[in-house]
Length: 165
Image (cartoon, rainbow, N blue to C red; front, side):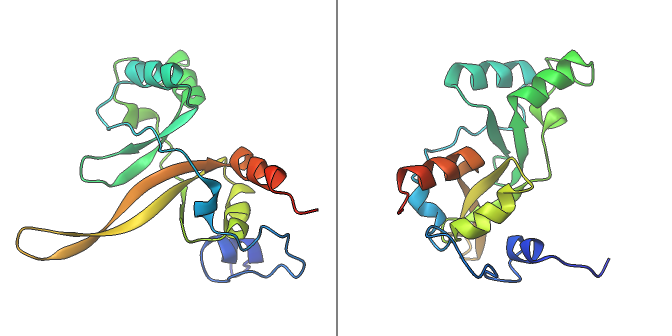
């Protein structure tokens, strides 16, 4: 389809902001949310262990990141439990069997306005930070580090605590 909407354009970085009457928080950077460090699971963690870890630590979801640093997706407590109970996955299966591999990423320097557009369609966004790394031979590459996971509740809490009426 050749139809593009403004929110899709903002979410995918083709437009900055198109909202004429932006709320006071629209241009504030994501880093101001003061997100706590995320719980990260490696791909070999079993569904059983993932459920235990998420429940014990009080998290609803966690990014699944390979040892190389590649973000494979998100695992959620509800999706893991549902998949196991429906018989689509076993407790012993690796968590990669139940991950969401469709997810949005946002940078620390991106605006809360862009985050707001993402959260209209997605339940969460993975906050990433680009970092240059060098190999032993001197060649470099950009690596994305997971900095946090942000939900609509995080944005709402920030806005309500800092509301400039």
